[in-house]
Image (cartoon, rainbow over all chains, first blue to last red; front, side, top):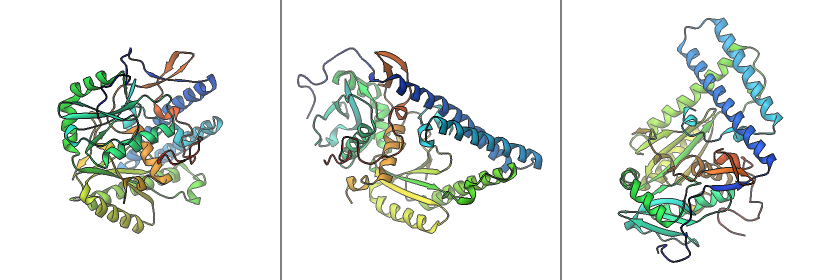
Length: 102
Length: 212
Length: 69
């Protein structure tokens, strides 16, 4: 079966599919995007820190400092998420090439 | 405006039961297309997946990511022409194969829900989690050698996500093997799903994982 | 085991959704958020699929996957 009959996919100027949204929805989407980017950075830093600690050679107080900073970041992130009523899965937007870093 | 679902070999001529679906051909390839969907939604995305899986049950496919559209059938055929040789090469890579997906994570423990008492303890938890997941990845890699073509670790921070490209004849044996591994690993929560169409092995310029 | 039975449960739905949104061949035709016809920003598909977590059968009723009422 082919699609050459009339009435199927009439030629028209190329348009992106659109989702009409109300301002509230848009704000939610933008917050989601911003927090996703922040979360991406947090995870990258966490990953680097873990690698560094596993590689060894750090002083105890350096490990302590790293851990405390990461803990704080984690907590702040949770606070922000809760504030906007977002779940962890909501911050998992596909960011294209950036997303692959995770 | 039309929706694009999957690319297949023209010769496979998959039967399309769904209303409104059509097969556009160019050269050796064909593309499954359908009418434009109005709004993006979870149900719409799942319906997209259902259509891809239906086509995949009878033919080799390159699944197209949800959200892809073309202006009309001519534009869709132009895409087939433009990407023809690249897509044919990828179809060959996944020929006769399906994808099996594994997700593994440590269970949320009560102890971990408590705030760590020091930075060092927090780091220790993170290191321990990483070692658990990396260890599981290595075990699975060894288990799957010789049983699947490619294994690819997908993005995931607090969990391990692996996708395996498995020949159809091996799908059930590999699923059993993984489920057996899962029940032995009481220190992790594991889910095994599939067979899926080979979504994770067809993207552009993707690091396509480790060939086993 | 039929293809469809594999995707009948919630766990499998999560994996299918992940695949359909996050993997596969990428072709243009982005979905763009707009208000009153003015394009705002490309947010990626997951941003407009709400809620992110599985909520069960669709709001329209029935099973989105099998099309059963």
